[in-house]
Length: 301
Ligand SMILES: O=C(O)CCC(=O)C(=O)O
Image (cartoon, rainbow, N blue to C red; front, side, top):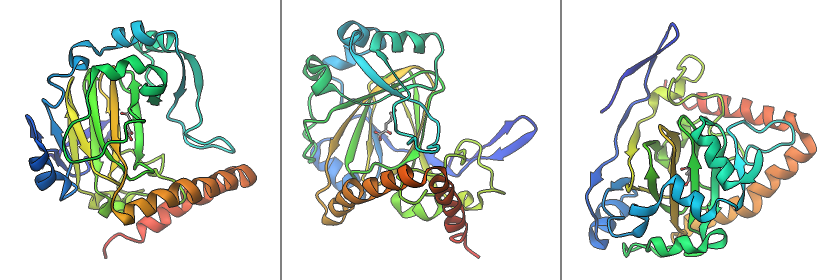
């Protein structure tokens, strides 16, 4: 169990309890299904990408060469305010200009869910879908990128997919919590995120006491590593260095997860959008208050 203190200014923060995600060299179908998928347990597979051209080729410079002129939407890490949703794009520019900004130290704007097949189909030649017992949805290989210090707010994926996050470039840290711990996650109602003001690196246990009951797992991803994220897992990501990752996803087969995906896509997202549009900031404030009061009620004792 990794369990350290962090000192920020004159305050000492006791880190959220977390152990390391298991790492393996390679996994074949049987090993993956019986040891990880069956238990919905994360794992880092270091050599799954060993024979992919992407492992040699993919870097910021290479993607700049191949797709530098493509216009991309970029997302920042600000919370929803008034009528603006946190997932609304914050800027649009050529991919090349964006990567140049990252090299100059930009660390807020992120490339998020950029569909490789639709936008840069030649990159699809550089990887293959692993034969690992999952039916990957081949229309949606998506790319993410961020600069040194960029953070992805704690969230879970709306579609309850099994995700293979294939990483290229500098180090990236992913902190994960299983769906069973949602009761301690300060989940904002009608969203797929934890409360924006909860800092998972420097937890404030006085304000957010439920954090002390969390038990997480952390993965340090290096170039070529693949992280398996099981359905519904919460994840918070820090780009320790500039990097990019591709997510391959397999949609839910379990009826319960399929039902949750449909409910999120059709009902929750639409309802939330309408409420923010018509109610504005009061809707955001209400949900933030409820995230705190609902979660604090779950603290034992
Ligand atoms: O790696 C990233 O920047 C984000 C990945 C992510 O949050 C996801 O795949 O759900």
